[in-house]
Every structure is written in structure tokens, then in C-alpha cells.
Length: 117
Image (cartoon, rainbow, N blue to C red; front, top):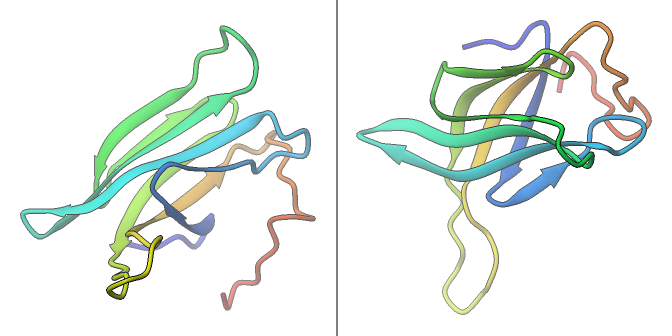
């Protein structure tokens, strides 16, 4: 799976990424794991605006969830992260392609990348 027209993001369980300039949009990852050898995770779009509907999907690799004002999140893979004994933290990462809509106000000051990354 490729992400030539989007941004590849690696995100841990229960973390929030705010990709817009105003910080009102949340990209959420939950439960990155493997099910029967296939990458799976929950990905969603939420808002800091009461009553505004978001979008969420329990996805397997190659599946997407979309929001008309934000864009599309496509699960690419899950990166397994092992925590050494005696240490806390860690956990798997959901690796996904974020394809913002043309009108989405992407915060390019915080989200910077090159085609080589």
C-alpha cells in the first residue's frame, strides 16, 4: 500500500494528533494490533466542537475512514514496539496515510515532511 498523495503518520494507542492550524480537529488511533496476521487498528476524526459529528472506523490494513471536512485515513500497517522488562510505556503504532481534503487547513508548521521521509 502506498501513500504518494498523503502524509504517513505513526501514532500510538489512545493518542491524539491535532493536524489543523486552530487545533480543533483530532486524529485518534486506538488498539493497533495484528488479527490473524493482518494489521488492525481503530482510526478516527474528532472535533473540539460540541455536537459536531466525527468519523471512526475499526480497520484492517488497506481500509479507510473518511470525514468530508478533514480527509481520509487509510491504515497501512502496525509497527510492533516491544517494551523492555522493567520499563513502562511503549506499545504498538498504527501506521496510516492521511489524505487531507483540498480545503483542510493543515498546520504545515507542526506537520512537516519531505517526499523522502
